[in-house]
Image 1: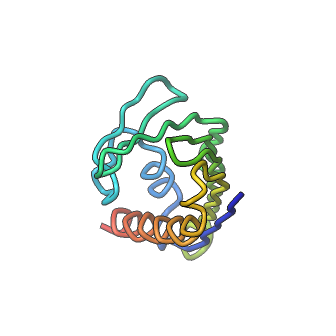
Image 2: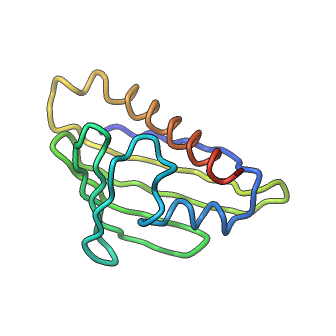
Length: 131
């Protein structure tokens, strides 16, 4: 099992950050995604630019505070937790991914890949929220 956490401050209000992260319709700001297909209020599939689908099932939706979901695709299964907190300087976010890699040959590269993906997501998120 791999656990990876990223923690940052975005110098804008909590509502903007929350709405950006949780929107399943406005995802054009994400440089890693081709499409999101919504199945229900608690289930959706994201398609990467290389067309790899990942199924997400929302397990907790506590507005402006906490967002969690399970995720799975051909390479991994896991859980993602997002914690949001408004501060005097903006919005503090803590995102944690816990995953289990299905294919043994991917395991040596998984932690590096996840960290890279988290940094890319945060960079895209900051860019979008600070427009």
